[in-house]
Length: 340
Length: 120
Length: 157
Image 1: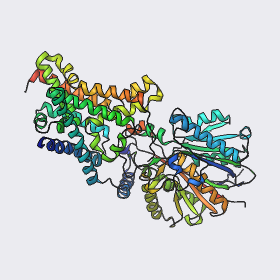
Image 2: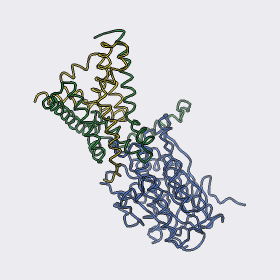
Image 3: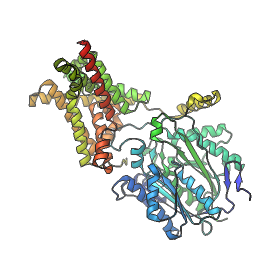
Image 4: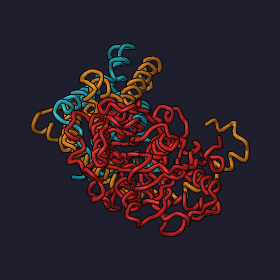
């Protein structure tokens, strides 16, 4: 049996799995951002009626999944797999949501690249005829990420200009073999872990950018395409610093990103004046923007084909304190709009 | 009034030094706190901090180097009074007010308040 | 990463990337940061002096007791401002201006005590109270014990 592949790193999906529906739930700050209209639910407060922010993150993840299924008119009993993760230790938000949803569950951790990781694995299951429909989801919460990776909320410290703001949000997509589609998944490039020695946990963009460059270049090499073949090349949460590095390195590698055809979810989720420094980050960033701003444009035909690449900094406070550098990862999927 | 000016300038300068250390050396604020306390103990033991306290009062005692000064002077005077045991009792006794207040009021704040999401 | 085991070429790549990152990462504004730290830190010390003077004038405290009174009051004010969610905003403006005075120590105790309340009173609030400020006590107290022991043998003052 032939492998469905292009080159060494890219999967080709001959059956073009469909993203039937999607949903995004975000926190109040995200809900005031430029994509306010695209979200399905904006929380009134970041606790979401729960006792702790961890519980709020779990409830938000679950809410995104349930809203996605409701929009697709799909009873959860028929969903054959849930793939997803978050930023909490032991990916507890996703695990607790899976407990409540009672859907067969594969927990994923790819830091902020989790949404692309779940889309790739979900597409493999659907395209290969192993499961359909499959629910893919990812989420993050500012208040839980701060205490886990940085400081308590009320601790007084200054953020550096390169620091990013973890998005409070969750996004979910339902993948199906047939039926109506917002978009099709046609290719996926699985990224390698790349580490160019960044230690500064306040400069995640710089830690992730080399992985983003690597995955993009491998994707273009494998498919024979150029950045211009996409209406948008979309990165997850490189932020201002990471995006600047990406532009420079891609030009150096012979794949300059055309002006106006590049988008970073982290740079577009908040308003510039919202005091978020280099932009948003977190699994919920690319997951919620995918649902709120990318899939609707593909459906409307505004964009015909995009490269969606979520980027992750595989940071652990423990190994970081032991002097380890921050490895980066990036996974890319090609999304094509409308019916063929 | 002159005393208050001295307090302001010396206290302010100690903070500026901390700011330069944070921005130029990537030392985290927690490390700055440790550095300041330890520096205060050492400077005080060498007899260099007491003149600064005489000159600028709260400008030298309120910054954390002053906390270190308190610990060192406490240990030294307790050794003078009670001998070797004083090395262990003196420092904490002298600094007890600040430590107990931070523990107690920190605990009290945890009882009364919840951390708020940062939404600005 | 075990950088010492890397080949020369790989080290060159890391060095080149570090330079690129340094060039494209925006810098904190040193002048503005120092100015803010100076005036806020100075004002906190002036407040401490005022509290000490009030202690001497109205409560008839001795000089060292008045200084302790000022510290305890500053710690109380910090805990209160931390509790109502204002202290971190001041700190975001002032940087070292709030870290270096005893307010930084008090905030470093109060904020984790509040933050980890959901994990329980003992292992949450009780244990985590010291996560950030604990090292201050460890190194400050240890240094003072060493000074005391040395003083017992040498008696330089």
